[in-house]
Every structure is written in C-alpha cells, then in structure tokens.
Length: 378
Image (cartoon, rainbow, N blue to C red):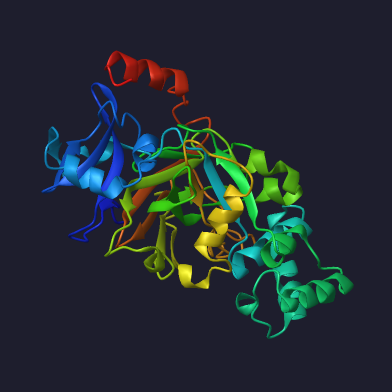
C-alpha cells in the first residue's frame, strides 16, 4: 500500500485558514511563504469569529504578513485540528442520484447488506433507462416519478428528500467534536455495514454567506440508518465520526462560489495489511441535485446560527464493490486509511477505528473558553 499524507492546496494564491494545536492551545493559523503563521488575537480568538467578520479574506491576508511564524508547514501538518470550533456542523443528505438510490436500498433491506445486491437489481430494473440526475427536485417530473414509484411499492422517505422540494438537513456533530486530518475517524462498534462519505464542506457565516470550503468525511453506518431513518443520530454522531480539513480555503477571485460547483472530489481507501484492499473513486460536484446556495438557504431557513455553521453538502459515493464475500459489498475494517482530496483544497487523511478505539473527545466548549481566557484572548 502506498503511504497517504496530508497535503495542502498547491494553488499558489490560495488563502488558507485552519486550526493548529500549539503548546499554548488551539491556534488560528494561515500559511505564508510555506510556513504556518499564528493569527490568533483578541479580535479573532476563534475561527468562528474570524469567519463572521465582514471581510475575512482581507483580515487573513493582512495578519499573515505581521503575525508570529510557527514553523515550516510540512513538520506541523500532523498538528492540524479540524478547521471549525464554535460552529455547529450540519449536513445535507441525498443530494446525488446514485447515493439516493443506495439509501433506498438500505431502507428496503432493513440495513441487511446480504440483501442489498438483489434489491439493487430490482430497483434498477424498475427505473429502466431513466436518469435520475436530470430530474430537478420539486419539479413536475419529480412528482410524476414519485407517483410511478408509489404504485410499484418502491417509494421511500429518501426519495422524498432527494426528489421533493425540501432538502434533508441534519446535525452531524457538536461544535468542537470533529477531528482533523491525520486523526483516527470513528465507526460505532455495533456496525457491520458502513462507509466513508467524501464531501465538500462549506464554511458559512452567521448571515448565511459562504466564505470558504474544505473537505470532510461524513462517516455513515448503512446498517443502522437502514433499520430506521429515526436512527440517523446514532448512525452519524459518534466519537470521532466526523472529520474535516486539512484547512478552509477562503473564497476569492481565483476560487469563487461558481468554481465550487465544478470541483471533483477523489477518494482512496487503502485497506489493512491483512487484505490489501484498495478502492478509488471520484465524486463530481457538477452532478449535485441542488445548488450549494439552495442547501445553505434551506439550512438557514428560519433558524439562526450566531456562530455560523459548517455544512456538508452530500456525496455521490456509495461503494458497492465486494470486499470479501461476493454480494456483501463494502464495509470498513479497523485500520483502513481514507484519503479525500481535491487539488484546489488539499488532502484529508484519516485512519478508521471503532469509535471506542479513538481518543475520547474531552476538549469541549468550557475547556476552550478557559484556555482562551488564560491566554488573555477573551
């Protein structure tokens, strides 16, 4: 197996913001001349406060030239934390046609991976040549499809949020509980059918404005959610079950909102030494069923997020490649290395463990506030 390392974007003019664990505590950092620069200050003690500024791009570019240098980027990459702190981590599901069908399969098989292939063939045959990726959610065509599938006994709540007017939006994890690149990522020990979900993650401020983007792994327990959609919390929010990174790339003239819709996100899984399993795939944002701005608007809705939020935008990736017994598809094994990458943003790397094997999350809101107060940043 080839080694996979965390990397930052190679785009020469990219403005990056992240969090680095320093001897003093979590610090807000950017890059300048291939070095990490500590831009933490009383005005911006958290990355949330920075993103809520009316012009975070100018602030970061200014601070980068006059703030303390922490060291060369390469040796410090292992100290990167998730590039989010006070923001809630939200997620949109069922935003790609092929992953939507996989959610339907999970539901109709009750999360039993041994039945998935047979039902997948039934569902594919019922749809015929229809290309679901061309159907606009909430449109006349989507309503007709809903009626057609209902008469065949194939309607699903996942098709409702995939084809209907309302997007699925849920809370992925609590503020400060996500992990960064290089960390272990957690799978609940009860799960025997699960997979990574490589996604574009939007950094959104309190006004609903997208200020930047990073990569994320919205780890999914297919068997748990397949038993009941009401188990979504158990399937999604576990110790270390959300990773983001390596850093947020701020939007600017060379990396605009419209550019996000054309990104490709690559996934590579390197299995354990015992099986040598490998899987590679790519997800194209151009195939997403709803515009990124719509996902943000539906997340904002009538709710308010004074600290802003991070928003996972969904994935087209739902692996069906057999790992082991024929017909059982893919599921993680402890020790898998997952790399999610995009040349404009970087590479997010995590090693899969059970959630109980991952370091427990202990540095919460009180710990952060005490740390910032001790450093006279509050």
